[in-house]
Image (cartoon, rainbow over all chains, first blue to last red; front, side):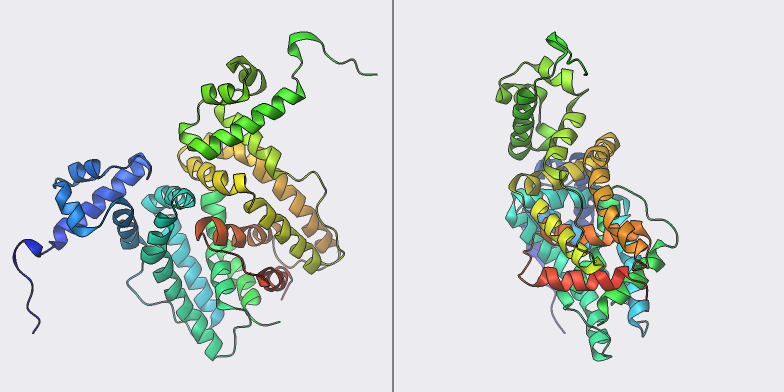
Length: 193
Length: 193
Protein backbone atom coordinates (compact mmCIF):
# COMPACT_ATOMS: atom_id res chain seq x y z
CA UNK A 1 0.00 0.00 0.00
CA UNK A 2 1.30 3.41 -1.01
CA UNK A 3 1.87 5.68 1.97
CA UNK A 4 0.23 9.10 1.71
CA UNK A 5 2.65 11.97 2.28
CA UNK A 6 1.98 13.89 5.48
CA UNK A 7 2.46 17.39 6.82
CA UNK A 8 2.95 20.66 4.98
CA UNK A 9 3.75 19.05 1.61
CA UNK A 10 0.21 17.65 1.21
CA UNK A 11 -2.00 19.60 -1.17
CA UNK A 12 -5.54 19.45 0.17
CA UNK A 13 -7.91 18.54 -2.69
CA UNK A 14 -10.75 20.64 -1.21
CA UNK A 15 -8.53 23.67 -1.16
CA UNK A 16 -7.38 23.02 -4.74
CA UNK A 17 -11.01 22.81 -5.84
CA UNK A 18 -11.92 26.09 -4.16
CA UNK A 19 -8.88 27.80 -5.68
CA UNK A 20 -9.86 26.46 -9.12
CA UNK A 21 -13.33 27.90 -8.61
CA UNK A 22 -11.81 31.26 -7.68
CA UNK A 23 -9.54 31.25 -10.75
CA UNK A 24 -12.52 30.65 -13.05
CA UNK A 25 -14.63 33.31 -11.34
CA UNK A 26 -11.79 35.85 -11.61
CA UNK A 27 -11.27 34.98 -15.30
CA UNK A 28 -14.95 35.61 -15.99
CA UNK A 29 -14.92 38.88 -14.03
CA UNK A 30 -11.58 40.36 -15.08
CA UNK A 31 -10.19 38.43 -18.06
CA UNK A 32 -6.71 36.90 -18.23
CA UNK A 33 -4.84 40.17 -18.69
CA UNK A 34 -6.13 41.77 -15.48
CA UNK A 35 -6.26 38.59 -13.36
CA UNK A 36 -3.92 38.76 -10.37
CA UNK A 37 -2.71 36.07 -8.00
CA UNK A 38 -3.75 38.36 -5.13
CA UNK A 39 -7.35 38.52 -6.30
CA UNK A 40 -7.53 34.75 -6.75
CA UNK A 41 -6.08 34.14 -3.27
CA UNK A 42 -8.47 36.66 -1.73
CA UNK A 43 -11.52 35.14 -3.47
CA UNK A 44 -10.46 31.60 -2.47
CA UNK A 45 -9.72 32.69 1.10
CA UNK A 46 -6.17 31.34 1.03
CA UNK A 47 -2.70 32.82 1.12
CA UNK A 48 -0.76 33.39 -2.11
CA UNK A 49 1.66 30.66 -1.00
CA UNK A 50 -1.17 28.15 -1.43
CA UNK A 51 -1.25 29.09 -5.14
CA UNK A 52 2.52 28.94 -5.61
CA UNK A 53 2.68 25.52 -3.94
CA UNK A 54 0.40 24.26 -6.71
CA UNK A 55 1.53 26.13 -9.82
CA UNK A 56 4.67 28.00 -10.92
CA UNK A 57 2.59 31.05 -11.87
CA UNK A 58 -0.55 32.57 -13.33
CA UNK A 59 -0.47 30.92 -16.73
CA UNK A 60 -0.12 27.35 -15.40
CA UNK A 61 -2.78 28.07 -12.77
CA UNK A 62 -5.21 29.33 -15.43
CA UNK A 63 -4.49 26.46 -17.82
CA UNK A 64 -4.97 23.94 -15.00
CA UNK A 65 -8.31 25.50 -13.96
CA UNK A 66 -9.55 25.43 -17.56
CA UNK A 67 -8.36 21.83 -17.88
CA UNK A 68 -10.68 20.91 -15.00
CA UNK A 69 -13.67 22.19 -16.98
CA UNK A 70 -12.48 20.96 -20.36
CA UNK A 71 -11.12 17.45 -20.19
CA UNK A 72 -13.91 14.87 -20.03
CA UNK A 73 -13.46 12.17 -17.42
CA UNK A 74 -15.35 9.65 -19.57
CA UNK A 75 -13.64 8.00 -22.53
CA UNK A 76 -14.48 9.16 -26.07
CA UNK A 77 -17.81 8.03 -27.56
CA UNK A 78 -17.85 4.55 -29.13
CA UNK A 79 -21.15 4.13 -30.96
CA UNK A 80 -19.78 1.67 -33.51
CA UNK A 81 -20.03 4.03 -36.49
CA UNK A 82 -18.00 7.06 -37.57
CA UNK A 83 -21.21 9.03 -38.05
CA UNK A 84 -22.43 8.22 -34.55
CA UNK A 85 -19.08 9.02 -32.94
CA UNK A 86 -18.77 12.33 -34.83
CA UNK A 87 -22.29 13.28 -33.74
CA UNK A 88 -21.39 12.49 -30.12
CA UNK A 89 -18.18 14.52 -30.36
CA UNK A 90 -20.21 17.48 -31.65
CA UNK A 91 -22.55 17.15 -28.65
CA UNK A 92 -19.48 17.27 -26.42
CA UNK A 93 -18.10 20.35 -28.22
CA UNK A 94 -21.44 22.13 -27.97
CA UNK A 95 -21.74 21.38 -24.24
CA UNK A 96 -18.17 22.55 -23.67
CA UNK A 97 -18.40 25.78 -25.70
CA UNK A 98 -21.76 26.78 -24.25
CA UNK A 99 -20.67 26.17 -20.64
CA UNK A 100 -21.18 29.68 -19.21
CA UNK A 101 -17.62 29.97 -17.86
CA UNK A 102 -15.91 28.39 -20.89
CA UNK A 103 -17.93 30.61 -23.25
CA UNK A 104 -16.59 33.72 -21.48
CA UNK A 105 -13.04 32.56 -20.76
CA UNK A 106 -11.87 30.47 -23.70
CA UNK A 107 -11.86 33.16 -26.45
CA UNK A 108 -10.10 35.57 -24.10
CA UNK A 109 -7.37 33.14 -23.06
CA UNK A 110 -6.99 31.97 -26.65
CA UNK A 111 -6.50 35.60 -27.77
CA UNK A 112 -3.90 36.17 -25.04
CA UNK A 113 -2.06 33.14 -26.39
CA UNK A 114 -1.28 35.18 -29.52
CA UNK A 115 0.74 37.63 -27.39
CA UNK A 116 2.07 35.09 -24.91
CA UNK A 117 3.24 31.85 -26.58
CA UNK A 118 4.00 30.25 -23.19
CA UNK A 119 0.31 30.60 -22.30
CA UNK A 120 -0.67 28.97 -25.60
CA UNK A 121 1.73 26.13 -24.75
CA UNK A 122 0.31 25.72 -21.22
CA UNK A 123 -3.22 25.64 -22.68
CA UNK A 124 -2.18 23.02 -25.22
CA UNK A 125 -0.79 20.84 -22.42
CA UNK A 126 -3.76 21.21 -20.05
CA UNK A 127 -6.68 21.52 -22.48
CA UNK A 128 -5.97 21.10 -26.19
CA UNK A 129 -3.90 17.92 -26.23
CA UNK A 130 -6.03 15.90 -23.77
CA UNK A 131 -9.24 16.84 -25.59
CA UNK A 132 -7.63 16.08 -28.94
CA UNK A 133 -6.29 12.73 -27.73
CA UNK A 134 -9.78 11.70 -26.62
CA UNK A 135 -11.21 12.58 -30.05
CA UNK A 136 -8.29 10.81 -31.71
CA UNK A 137 -9.52 7.53 -30.22
CA UNK A 138 -12.64 7.90 -32.39
CA UNK A 139 -10.49 8.34 -35.50
CA UNK A 140 -8.25 5.41 -34.59
CA UNK A 141 -11.30 3.16 -34.44
CA UNK A 142 -12.59 4.55 -37.74
CA UNK A 143 -9.19 3.86 -39.30
CA UNK A 144 -9.29 0.26 -37.98
CA UNK A 145 -12.70 -0.17 -39.62
CA UNK A 146 -11.26 1.26 -42.86
CA UNK A 147 -13.57 4.28 -42.69
CA UNK A 148 -11.00 7.09 -42.39
CA UNK A 149 -9.77 8.67 -45.61
CA UNK A 150 -8.07 11.81 -44.29
CA UNK A 151 -5.16 12.70 -42.04
CA UNK A 152 -6.14 12.66 -38.35
CA UNK A 153 -4.83 16.22 -37.81
CA UNK A 154 -7.14 17.68 -40.47
CA UNK A 155 -10.00 15.47 -39.28
CA UNK A 156 -9.59 16.71 -35.69
CA UNK A 157 -9.59 20.34 -36.84
CA UNK A 158 -12.70 19.74 -38.95
CA UNK A 159 -14.56 18.27 -35.98
CA UNK A 160 -13.46 20.93 -33.50
CA UNK A 161 -13.59 24.07 -35.58
CA UNK A 162 -17.12 24.73 -36.90
CA UNK A 163 -18.92 25.09 -33.57
CA UNK A 164 -16.16 27.30 -32.14
CA UNK A 165 -16.35 29.49 -35.24
CA UNK A 166 -20.14 29.73 -35.04
CA UNK A 167 -20.44 30.33 -31.30
CA UNK A 168 -17.25 32.01 -30.19
CA UNK A 169 -16.08 33.94 -33.26
CA UNK A 170 -19.31 34.70 -35.12
CA UNK A 171 -21.30 34.91 -31.86
CA UNK A 172 -24.24 33.22 -33.60
CA UNK A 173 -26.53 30.46 -32.37
CA UNK A 174 -26.60 26.78 -33.33
CA UNK A 175 -30.06 25.89 -34.60
CA UNK A 176 -31.85 22.61 -33.91
CA UNK A 177 -31.08 20.05 -36.57
CA UNK A 178 -27.81 21.69 -37.58
CA UNK A 179 -25.75 19.23 -35.53
CA UNK A 180 -27.20 16.35 -37.55
CA UNK A 181 -26.51 18.08 -40.85
CA UNK A 182 -23.00 18.99 -39.68
CA UNK A 183 -22.33 15.41 -38.56
CA UNK A 184 -23.44 14.13 -41.98
CA UNK A 185 -21.17 16.64 -43.76
CA UNK A 186 -18.20 15.85 -41.51
CA UNK A 187 -18.67 12.13 -42.00
CA UNK A 188 -18.48 12.63 -45.77
CA UNK A 189 -15.38 14.80 -45.29
CA UNK A 190 -13.62 12.23 -43.10
CA UNK A 191 -14.33 9.24 -45.32
CA UNK A 192 -12.19 8.64 -48.36
CA UNK A 193 -13.78 9.73 -51.63
CA UNK B 1 -22.68 65.73 -62.60
CA UNK B 2 -22.82 65.26 -58.85
CA UNK B 3 -21.44 68.25 -56.96
CA UNK B 4 -18.82 67.41 -54.32
CA UNK B 5 -19.63 68.84 -50.90
CA UNK B 6 -17.22 71.54 -49.77
CA UNK B 7 -15.81 72.86 -46.52
CA UNK B 8 -15.71 71.23 -43.10
CA UNK B 9 -18.15 68.44 -44.00
CA UNK B 10 -15.69 66.80 -46.42
CA UNK B 11 -13.86 63.79 -45.02
CA UNK B 12 -10.38 63.75 -46.53
CA UNK B 13 -9.62 60.18 -47.72
CA UNK B 14 -5.89 60.58 -46.92
CA UNK B 15 -6.70 61.49 -43.36
CA UNK B 16 -9.14 58.57 -43.05
CA UNK B 17 -6.41 56.21 -44.28
CA UNK B 18 -3.88 57.51 -41.79
CA UNK B 19 -6.41 57.23 -38.95
CA UNK B 20 -7.19 53.65 -40.00
CA UNK B 21 -3.47 52.88 -39.88
CA UNK B 22 -3.27 54.40 -36.40
CA UNK B 23 -6.27 52.35 -35.19
CA UNK B 24 -4.66 49.11 -36.38
CA UNK B 25 -1.28 50.00 -34.86
CA UNK B 26 -2.93 50.84 -31.52
CA UNK B 27 -4.92 47.58 -31.60
CA UNK B 28 -1.71 45.61 -32.12
CA UNK B 29 0.09 47.51 -29.37
CA UNK B 30 -2.64 47.79 -26.72
CA UNK B 31 -5.51 45.48 -27.61
CA UNK B 32 -9.15 46.55 -27.86
CA UNK B 33 -9.75 46.88 -24.12
CA UNK B 34 -7.00 49.45 -23.55
CA UNK B 35 -7.34 51.28 -26.88
CA UNK B 36 -8.31 54.94 -26.40
CA UNK B 37 -9.56 57.52 -28.88
CA UNK B 38 -6.86 59.87 -27.50
CA UNK B 39 -4.05 57.45 -28.36
CA UNK B 40 -5.42 56.90 -31.88
CA UNK B 41 -5.74 60.64 -32.50
CA UNK B 42 -2.22 61.26 -31.17
CA UNK B 43 -0.72 58.50 -33.32
CA UNK B 44 -2.57 59.74 -36.41
CA UNK B 45 -1.64 63.34 -35.72
CA UNK B 46 -5.26 64.54 -35.79
CA UNK B 47 -7.72 65.92 -33.28
CA UNK B 48 -10.29 63.66 -31.62
CA UNK B 49 -13.00 65.50 -33.53
CA UNK B 50 -11.59 64.00 -36.75
CA UNK B 51 -12.42 60.57 -35.32
CA UNK B 52 -15.90 61.49 -34.14
CA UNK B 53 -16.73 63.05 -37.53
CA UNK B 54 -16.13 59.61 -39.05
CA UNK B 55 -17.47 57.15 -36.46
CA UNK B 56 -19.87 57.31 -33.52
CA UNK B 57 -17.26 55.73 -31.22
CA UNK B 58 -14.48 53.25 -30.62
CA UNK B 59 -16.28 50.08 -31.62
CA UNK B 60 -17.44 51.38 -35.03
CA UNK B 61 -13.97 52.86 -35.63
CA UNK B 62 -12.30 49.53 -34.85
CA UNK B 63 -14.75 47.51 -36.93
CA UNK B 64 -14.30 49.89 -39.86
CA UNK B 65 -10.49 49.68 -39.65
CA UNK B 66 -10.64 45.88 -39.58
CA UNK B 67 -13.07 45.93 -42.50
CA UNK B 68 -10.44 47.75 -44.56
CA UNK B 69 -8.03 44.82 -44.04
CA UNK B 70 -10.63 42.09 -44.27
CA UNK B 71 -13.03 42.66 -47.14
CA UNK B 72 -11.48 41.74 -50.49
CA UNK B 73 -12.01 44.26 -53.27
CA UNK B 74 -11.99 41.53 -55.93
CA UNK B 75 -15.05 39.31 -56.43
CA UNK B 76 -15.06 35.74 -55.09
CA UNK B 77 -13.06 33.11 -57.02
CA UNK B 78 -14.81 31.55 -60.01
CA UNK B 79 -12.70 28.63 -61.22
CA UNK B 80 -15.62 26.69 -62.67
CA UNK B 81 -15.54 23.89 -60.09
CA UNK B 82 -16.56 23.71 -56.43
CA UNK B 83 -13.20 22.14 -55.57
CA UNK B 84 -11.28 24.94 -57.28
CA UNK B 85 -13.38 27.67 -55.69
CA UNK B 86 -13.07 26.12 -52.20
CA UNK B 87 -9.30 25.87 -52.64
CA UNK B 88 -9.17 29.55 -53.64
CA UNK B 89 -11.32 30.55 -50.65
CA UNK B 90 -8.90 28.67 -48.37
CA UNK B 91 -5.99 30.60 -49.91
CA UNK B 92 -7.87 33.80 -49.14
CA UNK B 93 -8.56 32.70 -45.53
CA UNK B 94 -4.91 31.76 -45.01
CA UNK B 95 -3.69 35.10 -46.37
CA UNK B 96 -6.19 36.98 -44.17
CA UNK B 97 -5.50 35.08 -40.95
CA UNK B 98 -1.72 35.23 -41.35
CA UNK B 99 -1.70 38.96 -42.11
CA UNK B 100 0.49 40.21 -39.22
CA UNK B 101 -2.06 42.75 -37.98
CA UNK B 102 -5.12 40.53 -38.43
CA UNK B 103 -3.35 37.64 -36.66
CA UNK B 104 -2.80 39.85 -33.61
CA UNK B 105 -6.06 41.78 -33.61
CA UNK B 106 -8.82 39.42 -34.73
CA UNK B 107 -8.77 36.93 -31.80
CA UNK B 108 -8.65 39.82 -29.32
CA UNK B 109 -11.57 41.73 -30.86
CA UNK B 110 -13.50 38.49 -31.27
CA UNK B 111 -13.00 37.70 -27.54
CA UNK B 112 -14.13 41.21 -26.58
CA UNK B 113 -17.29 40.55 -28.59
CA UNK B 114 -18.27 37.98 -25.95
CA UNK B 115 -18.41 40.75 -23.33
CA UNK B 116 -19.69 43.48 -25.63
CA UNK B 117 -22.44 42.28 -28.00
CA UNK B 118 -22.55 45.68 -29.77
CA UNK B 119 -18.92 45.17 -30.79
CA UNK B 120 -19.75 41.71 -32.14
CA UNK B 121 -22.60 43.32 -34.11
CA UNK B 122 -20.33 46.07 -35.52
CA UNK B 123 -17.76 43.41 -36.52
CA UNK B 124 -20.46 41.37 -38.23
CA UNK B 125 -21.54 44.42 -40.24
CA UNK B 126 -18.03 45.56 -41.24
CA UNK B 127 -16.18 42.24 -41.54
CA UNK B 128 -18.17 39.03 -41.14
CA UNK B 129 -21.15 39.67 -43.38
CA UNK B 130 -19.23 41.14 -46.37
CA UNK B 131 -16.68 38.29 -46.26
CA UNK B 132 -19.46 35.75 -45.93
CA UNK B 133 -21.46 37.27 -48.80
CA UNK B 134 -18.41 37.01 -51.07
CA UNK B 135 -17.99 33.31 -50.22
CA UNK B 136 -21.73 32.79 -50.64
CA UNK B 137 -21.36 33.65 -54.34
CA UNK B 138 -19.23 30.50 -54.68
CA UNK B 139 -21.96 28.40 -53.09
CA UNK B 140 -24.67 29.98 -55.24
CA UNK B 141 -22.79 28.96 -58.37
CA UNK B 142 -22.26 25.44 -56.98
CA UNK B 143 -25.99 25.21 -56.26
CA UNK B 144 -26.77 26.32 -59.84
CA UNK B 145 -24.49 23.54 -61.13
CA UNK B 146 -26.29 21.08 -58.80
CA UNK B 147 -23.12 20.46 -56.79
CA UNK B 148 -24.24 21.75 -53.38
CA UNK B 149 -25.81 19.25 -50.99
CA UNK B 150 -25.71 21.16 -47.72
CA UNK B 151 -27.18 24.34 -46.27
CA UNK B 152 -25.12 27.42 -47.19
CA UNK B 153 -24.80 28.48 -43.53
CA UNK B 154 -23.13 25.21 -42.52
CA UNK B 155 -21.04 25.22 -45.69
CA UNK B 156 -19.76 28.74 -44.97
CA UNK B 157 -18.82 27.77 -41.40
CA UNK B 158 -17.03 24.65 -42.65
CA UNK B 159 -14.97 26.71 -45.10
CA UNK B 160 -14.14 29.49 -42.65
CA UNK B 161 -13.57 27.58 -39.44
CA UNK B 162 -10.70 25.07 -39.79
CA UNK B 163 -7.89 27.54 -40.56
CA UNK B 164 -9.02 29.92 -37.81
CA UNK B 165 -9.10 27.02 -35.36
CA UNK B 166 -5.64 25.83 -36.43
CA UNK B 167 -3.92 29.21 -36.54
CA UNK B 168 -5.72 31.47 -34.08
CA UNK B 169 -7.05 29.07 -31.43
CA UNK B 170 -4.57 26.18 -31.49
CA UNK B 171 -1.69 28.49 -32.47
CA UNK B 172 -0.32 25.78 -34.73
CA UNK B 173 1.09 26.01 -38.25
CA UNK B 174 -0.52 25.01 -41.56
CA UNK B 175 1.77 22.53 -43.33
CA UNK B 176 2.38 22.44 -47.07
CA UNK B 177 -0.13 20.20 -48.79
CA UNK B 178 -2.71 20.48 -46.05
CA UNK B 179 -4.72 23.08 -47.96
CA UNK B 180 -5.16 20.60 -50.82
CA UNK B 181 -6.24 17.83 -48.47
CA UNK B 182 -8.57 20.22 -46.65
CA UNK B 183 -10.09 21.42 -49.95
CA UNK B 184 -10.71 17.79 -50.96
CA UNK B 185 -12.37 17.02 -47.62
CA UNK B 186 -14.51 20.17 -47.71
CA UNK B 187 -15.61 19.46 -51.27
CA UNK B 188 -16.84 16.02 -50.14
CA UNK B 189 -18.60 17.65 -47.19
CA UNK B 190 -20.33 20.26 -49.35
CA UNK B 191 -21.53 17.87 -52.02
CA UNK B 192 -24.62 15.80 -51.43
CA UNK B 193 -23.93 12.21 -50.43
